[in-house]
Every structure is written in structure tokens, then in C-alpha cells.
Image 1 (spheres, rainbow, N blue to C red):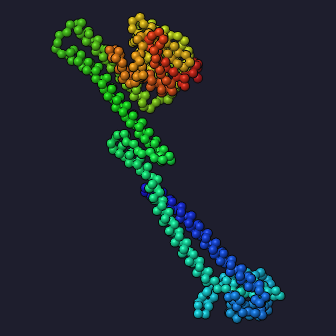
Image 2 (tube, one colour):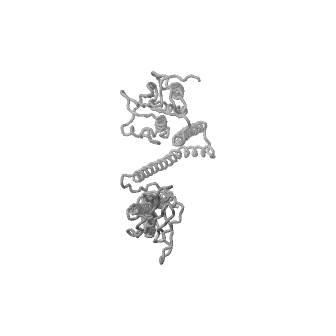
Image 3 (cartoon, rainbow, N blue to C red):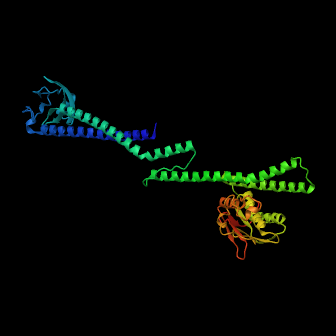
Length: 442
């Protein structure tokens, strides 16, 4: 059952219940009013002086009978009064009352009577009777009218609800159609119209925002795959070429063979670094493990020792390495810190210097190399971006992109700038995840 049909049935059902309750209330209110009018008139006529035992003629259309305590009855209209309850009133043992009765009227047949039995001063009782078949007739007509009104109101409500639900659910149908087309084509470039300011308009805006995010994500994925394929192709081609030469029948002297093996080693190291970077970025886009606290200062000190071994010609200077606890992912942060140090060491050259500090939740790495070109600085954290000067050096342009991914995963930021006096300065800030202190064993 469609949502439109369900809304129509609910609206029609609610209207039907409301109309039924209103009709029932109207019916019983009218019935009460009609009986009240009759009872008031019967009580008035029963109280008139000439309604007593000496004048039992018709009174204003009502029929009258009376009975004395000794059982003497005056009943010219043959009103049925052989009732113990009436005799009890005549004897003074009961109060007067109203009641309905059935009687057979000559030439008419069975009729419904309304009776007022009222005691007479000095003893006895008077019975005033009125034919109330007209009330039943009027109430029957009222019932028919109310039933027709209820059915018509319910039908109109159902029709109006269907039209209203069609207009209200039009944005939902557009969203559904757009979702189905996107599912078929796989292209989230379509957008739905955004009209109005209600909930459905906001739903359309949210849907378009989701489509925009999905489109951007797919585009990033396509670029990532294309860039990764391009970056992998170069070292793979070089590896294959060198392997073919080594396996060929060409005689190589020891020096040529050594150079080929060195090239193979260098290319395999670049492949390993590139694959590691790709895995790190794919991991950043996937499900994250649970965070855990670790000592960032110890991680930085370990990375400095590794950098000194990797770049022995560079002077590594550590300033103010404060004890810092970070709630996050230790292995990913280790990769980011190493990328910063490796990038600084790579650009420092022979006899260069790199200065490292960790204070206030911020890691600062400054080298004394050429620094960032102004046109490159806004792009250095993009995946696979390599400046013109960097294309002659090993690497795939993933190092600083990984640093940014790790910083954002910890709620932090990373910034690149040119240091005063020359060189590059990269600042990794972790204010939200870092705090001063040393972890204690629990």
C-alpha cells in the first residue's frame, strides 16, 4: 500500500470518526429536546384544574384519563391504565412519572404514546397521553440525513486528502525518482528542485547536499585511482625494463650490473613507499579503529632517531619536546610525524639543519631548504601533488597529504609556510586531542 493511499485512508478514517461522533451527539441532543418539549407540555396539562376527574375531554390535543384511590376510573379515550404503577400513584404510594407506551389506535394501528402520570390533590391520579409517532418519524429522517452527511463528508474528506497528499508528496516522488535514476545510472549529478521553506523543502535541500557530497566523493575516488595508476606505472615500467635487461642475453660488466641492481632497489623502495601511502589514505577513508592515548613526545623522539640514521648529513635539532599525551591513533600519527621529518630532511640537502619542537600540543618542523613557492603552498597537502622542483626527487606526492589526513582524523590542523630567514615551516596542531602529561601504568 502506497504512502498516498495510507494518508488518504487515515484522513478519511479520522473524518469518519469525527462526523460519526458529531452525528451521534446531534441525534441524541435532538431526541432529548423533542422529549423535553413533550414532557413539559404533558406536565403542564396534567397540572391544569380542568384536567381533573370532572373534565376528562381532550386538552390541546392530549388525551386524559383519571383514576381514584378506590379504583373508580374515568377513561373516555380508552387509555391503557391497567398498570400497578399508575394505581400506586393514585393511592399516594409513588411519585408521578413519564413513560412510553404502545397502543392500537382505531384506523391507524399501533402507535407510540408518551404518558404523564401525576397525582391529584385529595387523592387519585391523572394520566395525560400524547401520540408521539411524529417524533419517531422526525428522528428517523434526522438519522437518514446524518448518515448521508457522514458518508458524504467522509467521501469528500477522502477526495480532499488524496489531492492534498498528492500535492504534499510530490517532492517525495521527485526524490524517489531521482534516487532510482541515480541507482540505474550511477551518476549523482542530478539535483531535485528546492521549493518553499517547509520540511519537505529542507529534505530536498538535504538530498541535494548529499548528492553533491556523493558526487565529490566519487570524483575524488576517480582522481585517486587515476593518479595512483599513473604513479604506479612509472616505477613498474622501470622495474620491468631493468628486469628484462638482466634476464636478456646481453653481457653486462660488473659495474653495469651493479647500477641496474641499484636502480631495482631504488624503484622497489619507491614502490613500497607509494603502496604504503596509498594504503594509509585508503585506511583514512575507511572505518577508524578505536582511539587510545599515547605519548606523542616519545613518538617524536623515536622518529628523530630514525631520521638521523636516514639522513646522516643533516643536523637534527630538537627544541623543547614537552611530554604530551594524545588521544588518537598511534600508528597513523607515527606515519605523519615521519613524513614531516622525511620531507624536511629531503629538502635540507648536504650539511643542512632541521629544527623540531613540540609544545602546547603543536609539532613544528622547520628546515633550511628552498621553502615553498607561492604557487605551490596552497596545494602541498593535496594528494599526488608535486611541485616542479619535486618531480626530480623520489616520492609520489602523498607524504604531506597523509599528514593532513592524520591531523583531521585527530581534530587538528596542519599548515605550511615559509620560515623567517629561509626554509619551510610545517605546523601540526592537535589542540583538541593533545594534553600535557605523562601516561601512568594502570
